[in-house]
Image 1 (cartoon, rainbow, N blue to C red):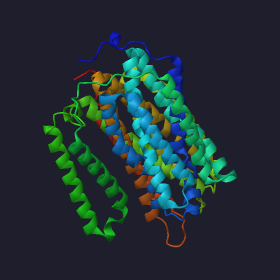
Image 2 (cartoon, one colour):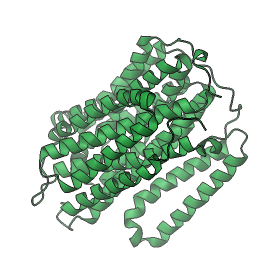
Image 3 (cartoon, helix red, strand yellow):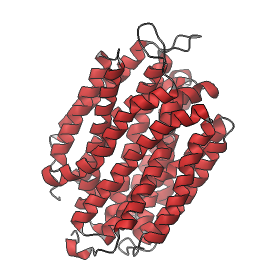
Image 4 (tube, helix red, strand yellow):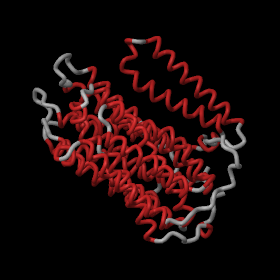
Length: 466
């Protein structure tokens, strides 16, 4: 049974919540600097569209691997302790990206930065253990919104910093902020007692098999566009993926203290939230990759030839919408339930993506479409996150929200790689300019997928515990 509201005493000060919010802004800023400067990075490092899409999802690759582990370890050993350690790794990754002289080193830095995605479930653990239920929901919505809202700072500042200083400084500045606010969080945030509900051991076989499953899945997605040129290698990877997944399920079903309780995943509220989150994030990432490319390209009757600074300004309204979506999504979930908020956001996502596929000849078309995509993503993900966090037992908060964040990462990876594959396939050899059909096809596929997601959404209950 879920712990009653009185079981969560008020031990976290407003200053501690504010420190978490500032850290979330800094982390979100570092996460977002690649998006508006991706065309610039592709030119400086001589990357193809597919390589650019890979760079765009490197953070998500590590995030998919580390998030369930971070959530589980946070539940067991304390959210604050794990959060400080993760931020140390993020800082190393940010500095590596800042100093990277070439693409391989930059990819390593982005992989290390990816552990930042594990910070959200750790924050939720501490908030839920130190605040009453109502205040905890508001704080979760605030931190989620600030994490997304940090992208506003990154989108706005990355282009000018990269153009006036260099690409190195756009990674260095938010990294310095993360270091400062991590120290502040360590001083102000109260500790949280580890949970004893999961046993004392760590499910190392399950951890390794889950990591192998997720890593192989990402590799399959990366190599999918070139599957035809190496069908044997691609087929072998698919077989390895199936073997990892089957082995993980078998181990988790027998583990005394599994990394992820499969019984929890079987609950309708949880698995349906995962499906919806995957689809919404697929559409968001598809738009997040294709829109900057469309703004940068100068094609025959399409594209705008925009600079990184201009791209950041065009993307800024979307970041503002995403910032507002976090708190609004939390409030909406409490008042109307996750199903209603998800229907609204799913319809909005489908409308925006299909609209961009049909109309993208003016800057304001891009601004409105990207803002609607960002708003839909923020509303849906926040509603799903707060709904699931309140649905499961307190001791499962970290792992339950981690599962959603893994789903978010996988959906985003699929969306970005889909966009990169379509642009690569629709680029005339020697021209370096993707055809307009590549953009249109990407928006249409993501939009139709979002619309079909309504078949799942309509079966969801309004947060009634199974």
